[in-house]
Length: 552
Image (cartoon, helix red, strand yellow):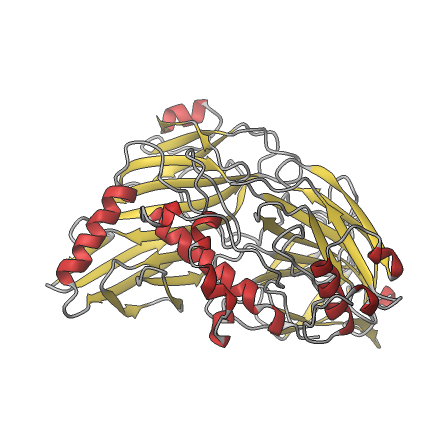
């Protein structure tokens, strides 16, 4: 069932948050004065065919199909071997100090500062996932001069303490393969990394590197840099147009008129990015002054950053209490009547939702699934997931990935939903999604919920101002239409709308076909995993076939 018509308000809001995040990081003082995030209800960027419910106030922003199975304690399907945050396999990329500590879900935003300065502002999001770790080391790239560092806990929005240490100090402090001729940021984590989950960090700094960022002639700039992180965005200085980029990329507008170039890279080596931009006629002086002002506010800071970055839909507060959600509120009227194109002009690389399917034996038509996502809207205290018609859901569980603590989950049907303390807006969205109709709302929403409507509800403490929570929702799903056995062939046929999805074959089966290109890897227990990366704002029709491994 396609529910894109109900996505638009949320997708526009996500785009606003991303744009506001950029303005904040660039030091836009006016934006920092804005107030709380816009209210309203919408369904987030769920894949076509997904039944999901979302509301800004009181309900989690969701978008996963109702599908997963897991133990309540870990959020992991029975017998499955699952990394703490189940990242896609990271191809080996040379990078100082990244081998002896585990991390995942990283994304980097580069904001190019005034041409001729050779400086660029970096906002790096990463999740530390080594169980029990109390510190995390971030290498300072060789050949780059770092300044203005600030580190934040993205769960609480609070600033963290850190120190610049040598490679030798990093080795003594818990990074045994640190390079001796490199320097590192040693970050004191706010809590030990849980066994399942991680500590989400935002690293804010400015680099000066003439070899990576330089002028070409009178009116052009070049940013040429090997990028080992798989998800990246580069924001051009004000008054510049993109004329060349050697990586397939989305080109998106910033709220302040700058241009953002975003891409996802799946190759086995660092992405050899080379980007060229040209100054627009008549914009030189004004653009230079604006860029210089932004650098003064956001690029060369002696203390904490004015406003830390946040994921699309995730606000991270600063020491002064400013949040990205608050900044986005200033542009709330834009979200009220988004153009149809708004759904497609959302940065795919920065979306943080991940779904992993663990196929059971095909005769069962069942697969376990978990869905990781970040909730940041103030006051939100629950996740709602409507089970699609014709499918069966069981064994639901939920986990707070920031702490590793399990959350309370219940499955309600029909009349029980009317007495579950849900708001009229939530009941209306459940009724619309459950019936497969366009959003209608109305006071009669409770009456329109059919007796067979089934909803999984995960409850968690309300999100406070400037905070966010990383959640894992898990269930077992049975669907003979998308997962079946045809003769001797296992067939998994399903549409994915997320940028990142993964499918793990059942034990004892080998891969014979995948219609959509995927990264192939072997899990610790010998199962085959396929990771799908879709950088486009559309869905992919995944078709996987497999056969039983011969005995012996």
